[in-house]
Amino acid sequence: MIESQRDLFVRELRELYHIERELEDLQSELAEAATDEDIEEYYMAHSETTSEQIGRLETLFDAVQEEPGALESPSLAGLREDREEIVQDVEDPHLGDLVETELGRGIERLEITKLETLLTLADRMDLPNEVVDPLEQTKAEAENGLENVRTLTA
Image (tube, rainbow, N blue to C red; front, side, top):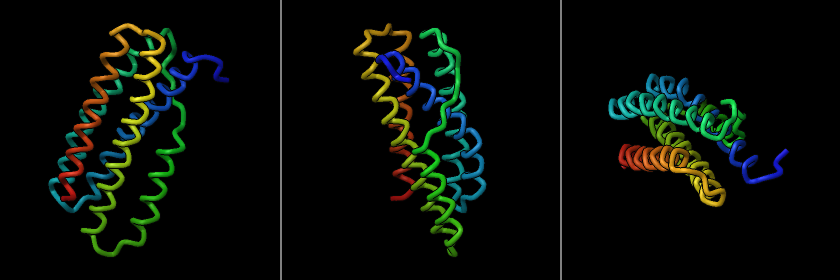
């Protein structure tokens, strides 16, 4: 039950944590599926960033005195389901690369949206820099990731 801004903050943090944890596995799958070397390299390099982001989120749980926990993300599940349906029908592998980068853009946007919500809540709750700074850093990385994945499809 969400009764306060803090409850919503923890819920959103747990959902973002789930998204990042899912990405750890998904990125290697997407890299393997790619036929374009640049797309493969993007997902492999992004895997390192994701691991760093997970570590950063874990410290945020400590900062707000909550146990790390993952909360299923229906949005991420929908993006993955959509990708799987399309990939099954794609006959040209290069079109598959476009589908993989579309998923990458969707995930980066999802992360950015969650981070914007967390930052808004952190501001309203007047949370300390030890919470705000890692969220801002992670948001900047997600925005950079979105820009990078956009260049792959240009």
